[in-house]
Length: 387
Ligand SMILES: *Cc1c(COP(=O)(O)O)cnc(C)c1O
Image 1: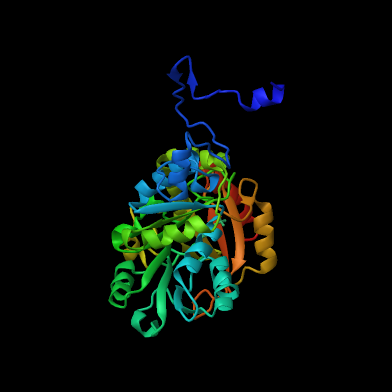
Image 2 (image 1 turned 90 degrees about the horizontal axis):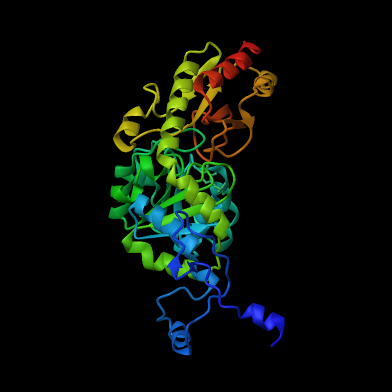
């Protein structure tokens, strides 16, 4: 027999050595497109959709399933599936639950690319989008005959406005609308949307879940009512995440509880201190008593994570903002958030409906895991240069 024929057919189950399972604490990494059947009978079961095991890479390998199951437990969901990024998770939810002629109501404080998806993609399929303010009293006024879903982000990751979820869910249920939330800021540790009657919860795993700024991934967790529909569309779309990324996400997830607490403490310390600074007009952080929706924050959230915003007084020019950002040593100038390294970014608020922050620059701080006094000193030093 040819050497290569031998090598290819070598029986070597790397999980069993000396008749014993190699019981590592962490799961081994599976890399596979094809999974071999034990028999033709099994293959026929798979052909008829009756095989209970994994028979192809797109069925999700053990690493993908372990991550999904872990998130499913945290979100208290029926089904959780993972995606190659947070934005692809959002895109998939929108496209699997909406069809031509439908209308979606979106809270106007959502993540910018979510709005772009509505503008560029949904419009192509004749799906209409309307925006409503986070603090809308009259949600019913925004609902049309063809409204199918309401999309929330609470608090939004730019202006940190919170929605009164109970009220929205009540209205949505009355009109038989699907409720979807981008739950990245709170993570399922600090808010469990499905327990509040929201149908679908989305995470950008990229942020706190992985926590190391080393992967891009998203997840969608769905309640029982919508699970079968969601899963049907998921399996058809060929969405695959690498096993290595799943292992990294799982590694992050396992320490989320202690990391998040530390992010929260650092953010609360910095936000409280910054709030008193003479060139700062406003600090946007739901855990502060000064937050306009602090009551809603206390009603819904078990804690606040490490991301918050601030607005300088109007006298601080764009040039001074640039000097401030360039003077920081510990805060990295970078998009994204939720990792161990503190980050800072600045962006102008542009809204699709009225917002008190319209056209103001929001400085967004992701408090990392450095010592809080060091972070404060760094900010203090940069603020001195422009005060
Ligand atoms: C980053 C982010 C996303 C998108 O996640 P990616 O993994 O970067 O695609 C979605 N929603 C919110 C609130 C985010 O901050």
